[in-house]
Length: 292
Image (cartoon, rainbow, N blue to C red):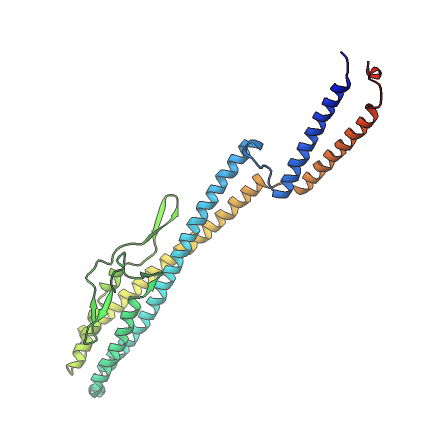
């Protein structure tokens, strides 16, 4: 077989083209810090990276939902804490009204009760992101209002609806406390009764004080439930954060290059290219007959 100059040139150009292609790929990997630019570079690796990226994006969505749930529940707990403080104040006022020495103060005590009741009503109507904390899924009107006499009037709307967010592929969780648990606690009725009793010039009865005490216990139970929900969301946030970290590490292992290794390979390609140039310079000045 004759070795022509054209054959040598084609062989040389093909070899140089492959080296240049390899160099470009290595340089691109260094620039992008990724093992592959196109799926065809590594089909299995690319598909795994795509799947991991999808999982990470879903996990981030679940984390955002969990964060929103934590914020909503924290706002609910803050309101419940303040409601509890106001109820404690009402209990102190009701107890003091039972002292015969305070009989002449019934009117002022009733006004103090109205002030605490007004604060409780306002706290019950608190919102987060334009949603009532204790309004269920109805956002059209306040949960509780005050009438012209300063007494509480509960909304007739159903406040048991749950505001749910997705926290995993197969699970949704309510971020709110049912408003009915507060409305049905007996709190507003017991305070209204105490105000009426005092305005009529009478000391609170034992049954009225017991009703207030039961209402207080019910509010504490709601507060405890909110705390449990918040703990659950905090735990889920920690779990999802851990998952995200693991998935990111897996994605890095699939995609990310080893810069030191790439640099060594790049130097090798440069060396091969220099060798190719040297061979060419030595070969082409010779006659084709030297190869026969």
